[in-house]
Every structure is written in C-alpha cells, then in structure tokens.
Amino acid sequence: MISVFNQLFPTLNHVDATGKIRILPEDFVVIEHNDVVFSGQGEHWWIQLEKTNSNTAWAATQLASACKVPARQVGYAGLKDRHAITRQWFSVQLPKIKDINEVCEKLPPEIRILNHYWHQSKIKKGQLKGNQFEILIRDFIGNKEQVENNIKSIQTHGVPNYFGPQRFGHKMNNIQKVQDWFAGHIKVNNRNLRGLLISCARSHLFNLIIAKRIENDTWNQVIEGDIMQLDGSHSWFHAKDASKCELSQRLNEFDIHITAAMWGENPVQSTATCAQFEQKIADSIPIYHKGFEQFRVSQDRRAVRLLPQQLSFSWQGSNLLLKFALPSGCYATSVLRELVRCEQNETESSD
Image (cartoon, rainbow, N blue to C red; front, side, top):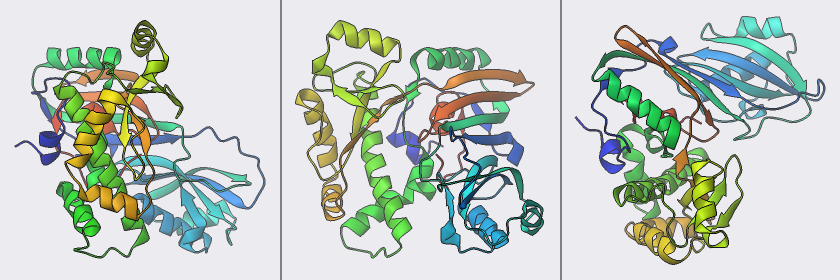
C-alpha cells in the first residue's frame, strides 16, 4: 500500500525494495553535532543526553525536574525521533542542583548523561551543525544490485530535499488541520501547535514544488528566474547573475543548489518562469495565502537538493546498515525512501 506521503511526493529513483525499520531502538541511531566552543563558565549548564524511546519534550521535562527548575529554563535545538536511540544537547539555566551525579540519579533509566559543560548562553532552536545517522533496515526484500546503484546515484546527484512525513503529523492529518484553522473552522490556542501547523503549510507547498520539478525533469536543471543557494549557507543569488556554464559547473560540484519557495505573505523572490511556476502551485491552495498574511509569515528559500555526507552501507545477511550525515533541518527519510520502501513513524518531528 502506497502511503499518502509517497502519493503526493514521488521519489527520484525507482524503488521496489522493502524493509523494516525501528524494530528495536538501536536500529535507528541519531547523533546531534554542534560546533559550540564551551566557555566553561556562565549560568547555562549544557548537558548531552542519550535517550532511548523517548521524545525530546519529555526528556526536557525530566531534566528540568532533576535540576529543580521550570521547564521553560531548559532549551534544545530541535526535536529528535522518539523510536530511536538519540544523542542531543540540552541547556539548563541556573540549575538548583549542580552535582552531576545527583542529576543522574534523578533521571529515568531511558535517559543517561554523556557530557556536560558550563556556557554563557543557552542553546537556541536550530543551533546545531547537523545529525549523524546509523539506520538498520531489517528483513530486506528486493534487488540488492538496484539498491547499490541507487546509493551510487545518491552519492553523485543527491536526493530531493523533501520535508519528511514527520512534518505533517500522523497520517498527514496536519495538512487538513492547518487548512481548517486558516479558514476559521477550528481554533488553535496553543502557541507551539500554531507554529507546527504554519510550518506544515509552508512545507506542504515546498514539497509540492519539488514534486512538480521532478515530474517535469527540472529538479536539477536551472529554469529562468531560479534562485541559487550557496552550499552550507543561507546566502542566495539570482541565477540570471551568472552564466549558464558557470551555473552548470557549480551545480555539478555541489557548490550551489537550486531553491524553492518557503511561502509567506510577501511576493515570491524568484522571477520569470520560476516565479510563475511557484505561484501557480501556491494558488492551488488559496487558504494558505490567508493564513500567511494573518500571521505575518515571511517568504524564504530552501535548497531542493540534499547531498548526504559520509554515506556508506553494508549488508548483514538480510539486513542493510546505512550510515550518513545530514545538515540541520534535513530528514533521514528523504534518503531512505530513495532506496527502500519502509513504514515510517509519522508522529514526531526530526531535525
């Protein structure tokens, strides 16, 4: 059975193989990386936790309780997968308990402390360099040679930088929920839920743009009016400001990437053919315009292509082990779905 996500957002590669993930927590390991140089002083205690089958918000409340502070004094960069073993950083402002052994004793068995440092500032949302993944796909059924060829294709061309199914809630239900909210049919008072729903709407349009570019074979081809993003940066420029030869070379070298709109209330930043193309997709769901204007959401851009770093694989009998690293804000599901059709947990967001 093809999921709603796969129906809406097609893969780049032909994928027939199947497998199972998250049978055990250790089948899905996520390690968060940041490049913070700790000062060794200040009022913020940075603590690296390893948590098993635990969502990020719950772990934060457990840490707050152990340190005897309100939950609002605990920060983290982003949400991690629940059904996994994850290592991520938290910061605790002015903890009343500063003895690491005492904190360890108060934490539940699903959580353990790996490292801790003092710093002068708290951890901010999105403040991470990226994530390292180790994913075991069990009970593989399919053509191993085809999967290995798809891996080579990913190493050469990357994958579509879709927002993963986690972004849209269980069974993609948040798409209907945000449209009902924008239309005034339901009330959403919770601030965090409002943010999640607005992100869902923007991600929906972004994914639709990628899907259409895959369909018309321009996913990795510059069209008139495109905006290019520098690799590893949020800086971008108009494609018209460079020659076709230069753009082609820099695209092939992964120095730049084509972008798509992260929609907001302002006019789209692309021009000419690209602007018309993106506007047509946005206009297909007019209720989003109303919501973006009401909540003053700004236009932005996001790369349509993702190149996993340090991608490697190994066969373990009927199981496939994948290892790779992704930048902040990118989804492991975007890599997995180009190789094997796996059932995904769609209940929690990931960085």
